[in-house]
Length: 178
Image (tube, rainbow, N blue to C red; front, side):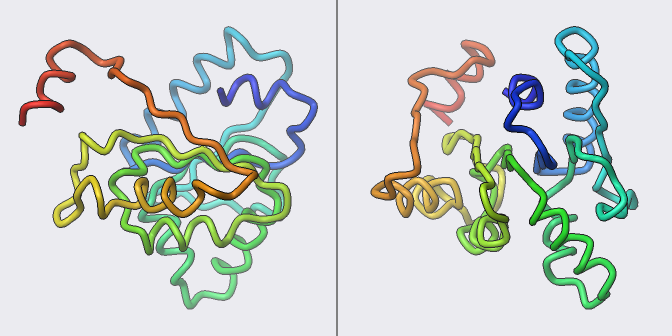
């Protein structure tokens, strides 16, 4: 998905891939870089924007930004003027946002992320409501369900439910029975 979007002529800003943790952000970055070596059609930039990694997005070239929920939340709630301006610039110049493991966000966290999208930004939320890892969230109260429900009747949105998982028979069985 990301490699195809980067290769498209519509890509003229950032792609922001938001994941659950710093470790997953680093894994996503390494996986993207490996895939881009195989499928890429031109040089591209990838940026770490999680943990202690910071970038000045007013000076960065378009590319793929790998970040975590906690880093975005910290930027949204920051009292530091530079951090706030930097995050606003990133949001304004983003073409595609991918929220991975969206089932682990609360509705308020989803709203905080989505309402900062700039003009023309596309949004893809990925998740499995049978695999919620966040305490106090359920299949009906998680951010992924909230977005699907609220966007259902908006003519510019779409929703796909996959009928089975792609991890393993064991993971599918555990999702259904635990």
